[in-house]
Image (cartoon, rainbow, N blue to C red; front, side, top):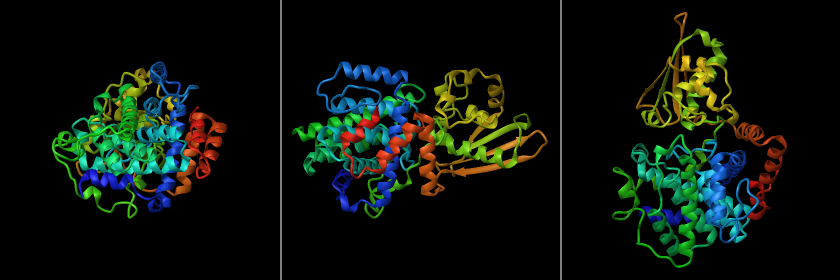
Length: 438
């Protein structure tokens, strides 16, 4: 089958074909997405985007993070996608290097609230949308990302369309039109990293997905295949692509989504393996900062265009700086708290001095989730440490880590209340779920 036909098949997957394990991860992603959005609701960009769409509002059907008014589903998706990525603390999937929850849950919940769906239906729509985003991202290949496209926004727009279309109840032809329509809307560039433009990418993915699905539902038509057809999205946005292997072992046989990675550090996910390696080295060997002669970080070369800001000017840019983050970890500064990433980090003389002794190099043999560090100490000894984010941690440990993260972002009482609601997702409505946004 063609890529668009595979997307349609995925969008229409029967509920009974969805595995319990995939659903569990999708439920954890829902919890993680909400805490990231609530924690980021007071950011400057959050106030700007909320005010903009409120002034532009029409039908009031969906809720937004940090707001008391309701907005049209498309506008709410734009707001929530942007806000929930404001802290850059949401989940990541390395099959296509993208953040799935911010664009796709924002679309799914907005539409789910509009059509009065159950919360579990929103969760399942998200899961299939995320699976679709991962697989279309794999079709586009690493070259698409390396060229400068932000998969959260490009592949994510297709995932948001699958989720929104499922909740709107689109038939097969309408789903085809929706996917072809969003193909002409999907956009997002990595040049925006380190600015308000990066979370905006997530917002437009969500908005584009709702818009395309809503138009298709109303009879808006498109070309037969705007995804993988001649001059379609894949052909025009990827020099090298693969329309076959990403569609092998389709759900329910395998959910690629099960490999989702959650952020436990408030910075770019491309730096987390380095942070874990440095933390392990420091815990095991107990070296002092003054003992460090220099540090070498090895990562896959594609991350050098994302996380290698040598001289960050703001706390936001520090999140994308291997050298500055390495200096912070070596100094024992905790990176799990969003509040740590202030602008004054950039002028801290101790951090700057150590950052200048951090070298970042690349190795093509590394995968996207593996990084290593070499720490040369003043006594001549060397410490080697390597970490791979794909090393699975037990589910109970993951749940506890996410609950701890939530407490740090939105407070203990709020975190436990939200966890209690998510635990009863099978009985809750989308409207009840949406109340948790504010």
